[in-house]
Image 1 (tube, rainbow, N blue to C red):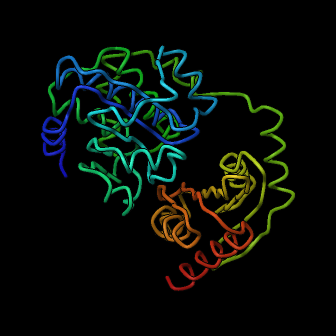
Image 2 (spheres, helix red, strand yellow):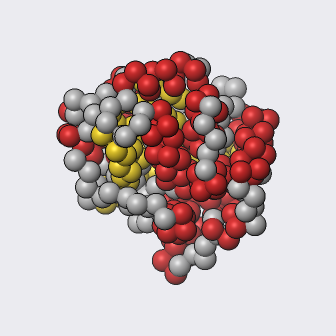
Amino acid sequence: MNLQEALNGIRSILGHRICILFHHNADPDALCSAYALSRLLPSIRAGVEVTISPSKGLSKISERVAEHLGITLEENPIIEEMDTLFIVDTGSLQQLEEMKDRVLTAKAPLVVIDHHAEHAEIKAASRLYIVDEEAASTCEITYGLYKEAGVKPTGQAAKALLLGIAYDTRRFASGTSATFKAIGELLELDGALAEIPSLLTRVMDRSEKIARLKAGQRMKIYTIDGWLVVSAEVSSYQASAARGLLNLGADLALVGGSGEGGIRISMRSTEDFYSETSLHLGRVIAIPLGEAFRGAGSGHSTAAGVNALGDLEEALNMAVKMVSERLTHI
């Protein structure tokens, strides 16, 4: 679906009361795309009431961004009374936690805006499925909707879009020509580039440091077709621990944890690993692994995650097996 079709589709189903949702422990791309979208929708239909709601809290960095931008969030939206629902930057319905069932039973049409690998369940539930895997961030797609609508973002919305793009591109270290064109145009609207690194930088607290150290202590190392693949179990900060293992020298890290809500696995690989193997973590590993363990997976080529049920060690072993089968058959 191109952006013109997407915008026409939004116009056709946009009601008066709107709720924008996004995944648990939301990162700045999710938060900022939701905020920028909430500023755009009144230009598409006058008088709309827009509520922004995270499914289960924000990440530490996103909390700082929300405070800086003055973003108002509603923790308990009345989804059942909304006329239109939006889900942004969320690869699977499982990432909405307890809001998933309420979204599925709501009468309001659902619009999904995302840049993760296509997921059958969330696509089937949506009236409009606006997904571009080539986009570096959901903020990039949201800015495209602004341009298609002929609406210039305010300075505050431009700053939000820049923050979301900066976060998902690791501070503009990756992206396509379209990404950098968008960055240049947004900088003309809000030139506060110097603020971005400080807003997106945080000092790890003690518990996160411990999680990273435990991951290093507990990791299992596999050499698969010349690549260093590692897996580990930690009770929290799985994504951070996976990034830490890459810094230690792993080409691909699989880090899981379990709790009352089930199991979670974060996957991270280096750009070199993806470039040479074409192993897309979201599409090839996370989605089928989530389905195998009565849950859901989603993600990008080098970063993905699974929320599911079952035995964590068994799930990690299956993930390693899936990687091995793919790499040895390239």
